[in-house]
Image (tube, rainbow, N blue to C red; front, side, top):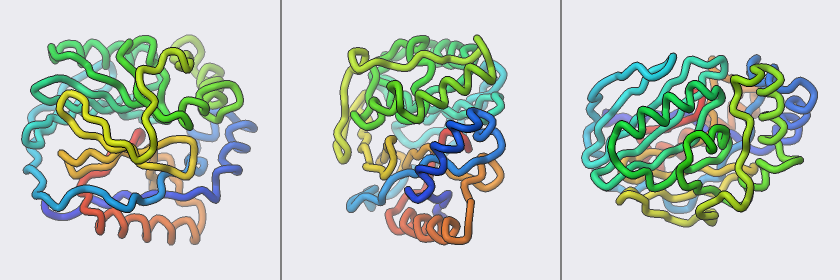
Length: 265
């Protein structure tokens, strides 16, 4: 489509309240749509002005209890895994002729194993997995981990993702993937603003005003962010918050993004 898909962003004013909500109510707060973790500041340079390859949906494949939609963007295929779990988790794989790059994991062990089986059936080497807010399942996937130092510290005791993972175990028991990566298990700590090329695919790590990060994917004219929300994990918590979202969606349009990927939408 030539029109820009705008999904929006949010800012840091809810950071402390979000952590307090999670600490008080655990995963139940997420299920009822508490404000999300804030996401990135707009970068000074974003997607190039080159034409976006026409997107063509290739197939929809049942995977576990969910499905994977495969969309072709020129030389890169996007595999979008929509789980059927209670938090509507989504994970992504970017496939080139040289290999595969993953973005984020999921909650339930069964979904993660089904996702791994699907990715392995592609028959190409997995160059790496970018984890920001959903590192759960890294041990099942077993691929090289790419993250920022800020996100990595957030997975350790005292971090909000560490606390949320504990809440997931309380909610879902042994079916939840609770293991989180230790610093010694990281293949590459990426600096904010750094561009990494894996499997011939360029990805730029965007700075955020929370502990996570976003990814710019120039080949798709896309940006990955953790959350946006209207009726799925609503993050529209106040008039001021909505006004911020509108301004940030305009910034997405100005940046030239035509696709926004999130972990829950």
